Image (tube, rainbow, N blue to C red):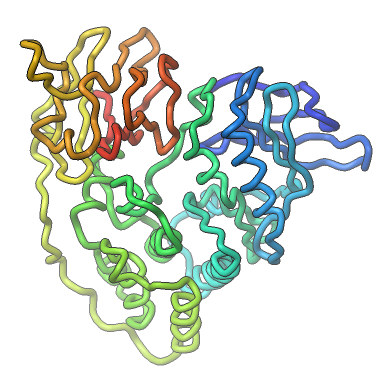
Length: 408
């Protein structure tokens, strides 16, 4: 869970209750005595000395986010660093987030569009200002009122992709259910990534479920990489056909087949809203999407394993306390415990001795071994010799090769 900063004073803010934690650190309800008000403070622990490259990028990204002014984007009050902590101050918004609403199941089409449209408009505005969210998910949409969504954490996924002195595993915990296929593959993200994530959220609002499920986070992620999204009509035939077509285009696996701009996606959603009374929807599309990958290895391997994101191949993790990940060295007779050479590790920039998985009493950790192209956990680059906790569903990237970790 990381260090709890409750009760600590950061700059002029007294941190009280921890409201949540995730990929962008932890959020606290805090009291600002100078203005006699409650605010929300997000903190990132970057160590007592800090990391100057990270802090510089943190300042640049936060300044850019602070320049965004939209009724559906949560504004920033303040930001800075204090005693090894980088912090961002936002308006305190009671009322919960979209994930709590989604837990109740599918919602009427009118309400789903009533929430999706302003989120899309906020993202379209931000894209026009050169900002891509990269980590859009229901917990990053606050609801001060049931009909008023507020998007939060703009730009912070980009900040965390920079090298940072990771002190607590909570900093790099990143739910992967709403990442686009190209993010899972380690490819650059642009506004089409936000379109995909918003399409996933809309699908869930309409049907009460995500389009890809599995027995584990890794299996559902592999399905997202290898299968076309099912039609929402397969789960609710009453969904308008025009809306179904918009959702399907937003969820195209290939970014080139998606909407090129969020504004176009929003425009088609608005047209679908106007067509709500145009008549009954067509019958549900029968299941018949081709599956291009089978995950039989998922059931055959017992214990922890790594799934190669681009192929779905499952690699068992030996039960040793230390497991070396890398490539075969032709000058040595021994091979690493997990050899990525046969799977394209060389062209992906995997070093001979790239990383080490460490089995400890509380679980598995990953440690970079001063690799040439870096080790990334959920797109956060790790510093060498700093083991960080890894959990089921986490993305591990060795150079340009992305794998998904799954525990037993």
